[in-house]
Image (tube, rainbow, N blue to C red):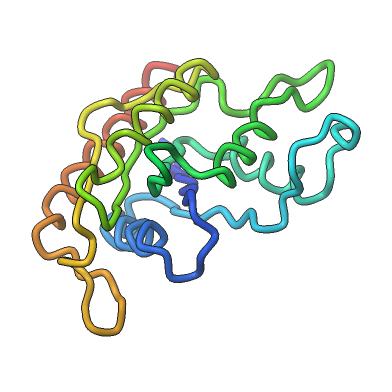
Length: 190
């Protein structure tokens, strides 16, 4: 069986965002069981059909990364009970057909969702909205387990680094489940 490739999409562009740190902790947990790439997309323009064809180079780059992935792991913050605008913009680009001969790149991709926030909801509301969107785009969503981490400040050290004291076993459980979820899907397709 080929080596699994997971692309992590963090819904925050901030370099040291809690969700980026959570994605890096997931990467560490995955270890050598899969290739794990954090998708960089800060250079993606706002979705605009006037520049859709041919797609800007940055859009082509992220589409290629997602297209080559066996699974997509979303790490979403929660902004006003919703996922971020930058994440929505990226998904809007990824949801468009590449050409009249090639469909969008998200359809059929296994997806996992995690999130951490300073508030009490732990990104649960944002995740529910995200599930609605990516289900519409025909992604294969692993609904259980999903990881929502509230009260981020209780798991941050004095340098602003995520320590994941109480939440580490839950991230580990989700990482293991997502690897299995992807493997089952790959087996079913072979």
